Image (cartoon, rainbow, N blue to C red; front, side, top):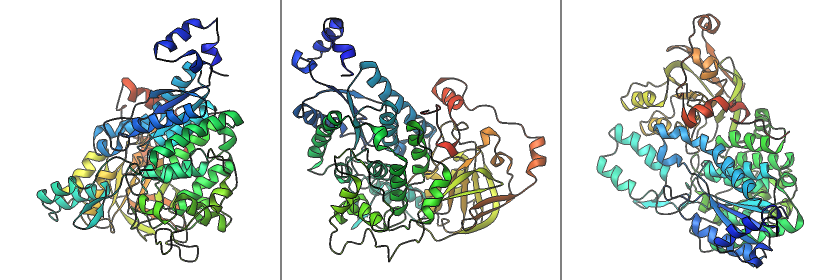
Length: 551
């Protein structure tokens, strides 16, 4: 066993002595050591229940003949940090969480790994770490929050962000905003729509690195502890089979994940994260792959933010197995191994569709004939950018640029009514290196919706968007401004054209002339973790990697 490096007697008796101090016995040390890595934190509802689920995972490991040892990672809550300087820490945390898991596991020579995830960046980080370590292991999603109830309707955190815009526009009072604040998030679990957390949880299930059963169940479902125990048993089964992540995370598995993201109308962040995961396991994956698969994969999921329903509704409708079945019916699903012990086709064949469900449509009645994401290129984005197509029907926008070097000034302009119908808001110097950290623009996009401008303006940025964002928004513009990309040269009034049909993003401006006199902005950070990240991070078009990946 791998763990013999630290527990073989007599050479490693000192290490054994330290392990005994934690309560382990000789019998425990004779068994495989399994890392149970929890992303537990009191700071966010997405993760606050993971300590309890970790205890159940450990029960499953013990019952299956292993010895579990728990560790923790850092967590950054997107929902709490959104619209603040703290939002820059979010994407940085993805890579640091993966690094933390790697160091914990490598440093103690564990034989297998279970990673419990909750909020947005913990989920791709888990897959990145599992692929990097390539030990028998899996991820367990903590599950979705249930929607809140307000005046007889379901509400989520998205309603809160958009309510801020309504309040600024005089459409909602402070008292009403306060009342909604107390209703939107009723307990544990990640944001309920097909935002980034549920999108990436879906992706990991279709990658085969997380079970569909465990992913489907909401955070506080009474069956969630049993799913956690099953995860503990599953890692021991993977160990016995010697089935490792890189055997599961194949090119076909990534195509499955992309198709699932497209068909459910998932977050644009999936592009960034799947590119990063693929890099960890040496699977060739490029921006164009997302566009190619989007063109042949319709949107069937009527899921928030573009649709009516939330993740718990999807579970009741038939869950991820039903999504798999839909994809298999049209030849959009590859067979392959999964950590559940079942092959992907078997998971699809086991789907049970709830009679009369309206959450996931049929191929004959799609919400959109193409997937929910498109990749654009042009004079403003030579390396590409990402646009979300669900939640609106707009395919083209031409308008004058309104340029902001950062999100706060843009947000203020929206709140003060200085944005006009037809404008193209440009938020730059918020890319992976320029932010640093590539913050999300949900505060601005939600304010636009709340102010009633969502259907008449467009927004482009070298930053990111929350999975909760909807409207005509283009992110991940590459090269970013900090790297001298064309977006750095845009001026107020330049005419920008966004065209989904031609997959283009262009600007009418003398960019070559402006570049001659352009002076780059100094780094936003010169010390600490952000400065380190800015030096290491690569282009958003490659997943914002911080190392070269598998060779």
